[in-house]
Length: 184
Image (cartoon, rainbow, N blue to C red; front, side, top):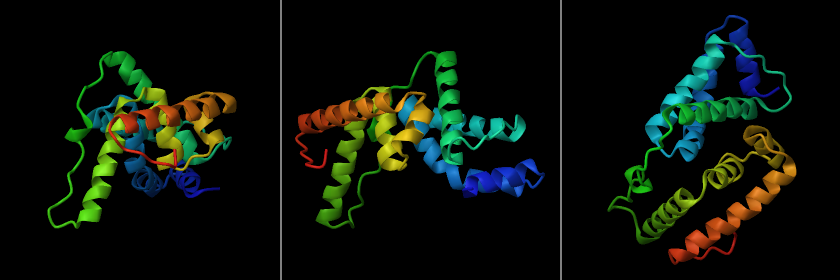
C-alpha cells in the first residue's frame, strides 16, 4: 500500500487529514500533467481542484488495480478531457508565458541549462497532446509503461509505440531549434 492509498483510506474512514495529505502530495505534479493536456495553467489548476473535489465528494472506490497515483491521474485526465469537450477551445498561450527566465545572478552554466529547459518546453509544446502526455508521464512523473497505459487508457504496445514516436518527434523539434541531445 502506498502513501496515497493509506491517506485515501484514512479519508474514507472519516479523517479529513487524509484528503489534506493527498492534495499536498499530488497537486503540483497533477497540475503540470494537466497543463500538458490543456495547454492552459489556469484550466489545469481548475481541473486539479475538480479532481480532488470528485474524490472528496463522490468518494470513488479505489480497487488497487494500479498505484494510487496512477488512479488519481486517470481521474484527472478524464476530467481534463471532459472540460476540453465542454469548453471546446484550448488556450494558445505560449510556453514563454509560464517559463521564468534565469536570474542575472546565475552563472553561465546555469543560464545554459535554463535555456535548454526552455527549448525543451517549447519543443514539448509543439508536440501533439498524446506525445506530450506520454513523455510527461514517463520522464517527469516516472510512471512505468503499464501505469501510463492505465492513465491514457491504451494497451502496453500502443504506449510503447506512442513513446517511440513521441521521442522521435521531440528529437525532430529540438533539432529544428538547433538543440542536439544524444539521449533521445
